[in-house]
Amino acid sequence: MNSTSATPRTGTRPGPAVALGLAILCIEGYDLFLLGVVGPTLLNHPDWDVNKSTLGLLGSLTALGMPLGSIAAGWLGDLYGRRIPMVVSLAWLSLSMFLSSVAGDLTLFAATRFLTGVGVGALIPLVTAFVSEAATPSRHSLQVGVTQTGMAFGGIISGIAGRTLLPEWDFHTLFLFGAVPLILVPVVWRVVPAVVRDHAATDVPTAEPGARVPARSASANRLSQLLSPQYRRSTLLFWAATFAGLVIVYGAGTWLPTLMVNSGYDLSSSLEFAIVFNIGAVVGTLGAGLIADRGLLKAATVVSFALAAVAMVTLSSPQPRPVLLLASAVAGFGALGTQALVNIFVAHSHPAHLRGTALGFSLGVGRVGAIVGPSYLAAVAALISSPRAGFYAFVVPALLGAVLIGLLRPARSAATIAQPDAPLAR
Image (cartoon, rainbow, N blue to C red; front, side, top):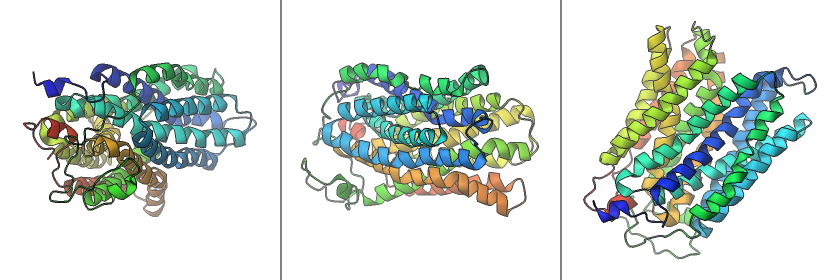
């Protein structure tokens, strides 16, 4: 066995790092998708006077908090190490969910959703960077991909919890479960290293072939480095691809079930669709991770965007139930799985001292897609009367994402430089 492949670069073994990252993102996925689960209950709340517009505003407040958390946590993670920002973010998310569980009026509840969005946005770049640095180089994409599936598992758990407990239980109780991350704080303190080990001599990918690598100091402006000639092209392409990916993710989460009903599908069991959608994301991400670790990360990401387009075209007209379920699974991979691969690609393409900042800004800028996505689908549905129009609206960002990733130049990652015989991420 190659010793480089077996030695974690952070002092943390890959197994514990992946397990911890998976647990954190699972809880985060639960928190993120819970608002949709309790939406029908909120609409029937006797005192809060919630309508569909109000529900949409609550979702937008959550999305608005995410860029702030992503950018701040990514930058702080590179500056001070992953441990302290991750502990603070977990405590922040736990407190936000606890406040949601005791919110006595709609105004306070709305404020807690914004705070929850900040916590959700903060943890994704921190967890992705941490696991990326602990991952076995030859299994980098698979191990980071396993972690990313936590979001889908969290969505499944929130759906099952809502189906099982509502409306008999007070919806506040489901938010109380979201305070569980607090128990992981001691685990994070023990497992996550205090300092990011930046092997500068072997851990710097040449994002732009032929570009001069700028000298780095502890006080260097990391955003300026991302926009320097060495990284500028890949940085802007990653931002745009993340935008396209999150338009699909949040547009699908908000509108896809409605579009399917309008197209004549019998979705009496929305839980079944949600489970298949998320299972597709999990299985697809793991399969794509295996392929990516054979040096095909770029190709896997391009294909995943293309599959999102194929799934939406397939769903645009009524299909037999087996085809419906298969297309729903492919749509799950094309939405959640594709964004997971983009995150992996960003982590794969930057050295440790820039990885958190790169992920934070990619997700932070890309979160505009999370805000635009639902409104974009709503506008298309309003302007074009055909029930197929909404599905084709998904095809546009899917094909755009495929083109953007296709424009990235081949680059050696930290893993491939540490392991010279490994293939390029092409």
